[in-house]
Length: 455
Image (cartoon, rainbow, N blue to C red):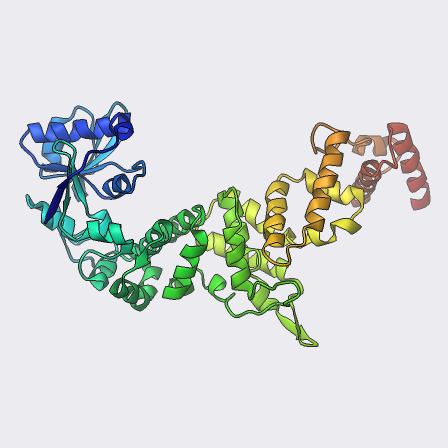
């Protein structure tokens, strides 16, 4: 065991969350129990970051914890965890425990409470997450070498990596996320175990896989995370369609950066303001290329990859149990991501309709990232910005103007309801957007002429 004095920054000590955690631990100490801050909170504190999770581990049992605090929620009591509320801030307070046999790769078959904190630490995932801090004495306690791994930037499991990953298969994805996010090197045996046991990750629920992947995608280390997923074979298990992008060569004149996988990784690195819909749209935008690749005169082509890719994206997102909101944004973004290539040839009515679409901001940003990640030709993107500026000059927003005519107007002209009415109204709207029809009178005159030719 290694122990040393550490005085947290004053800004941290003065924060309400930290003070609440100290109150929890002091209450437990005063009642005669051992208690420590544990996990990511200690890690982040030592790295100079503001801790997000302030979890407490203690020798007190769930019943003893509940008896000490007025607001104690026993939601995780069967796993030895009580949620304590201090000034409306929740703290997870867990009893020291040993765990025996993880038959399902997620939950222990048996939980044994203990008074020995070293046994509790020994069951944790990574050494950097197994450090303890006593805020009463201001001491950091290390049973597993986590301090040295923090100092040298190494991600290592506590004990045997195969055993740790077999206990909880989700830990493999967490290993990738931590290594990428912290910029740490994965220790050799830990890396070997990741590659060896990668197929086990398929036993993890789709929701948990999605949550881990999305945490990776929303962080600036997203490219590094996906490269490590590919290196370990985990990508083949959780997103085989993305792994299939590796080695799919593209025309070098348009894609000097390399194959489709390299292009996608470069795009991930160029995301400036991530959102769930945008990061998934970037990741999946070229997923249809392997299925549509053809070669003519030595040049690869991917005709229709955007349509095939949209269908594949929908299948992938549903497989990972994404929300309808994400589906309704990502799938059309993938389907439409090539249409900006022809913006210079579009009639005003068409690009105005595109700009008025609720998904337009994500589609335009996807196009920008796509351009800077390959040939770096930004002409069409800049042209669209110019046209948006034109729209702003013409109106306060990009919403379509009120239609000049409706179905009732056409009925009064003698037209019967049906598909032809919808087609005529659409045509009138296009002419309105192109400023060829400006008033209702002009639209009525146009409609009368069309109806005359239709008789």
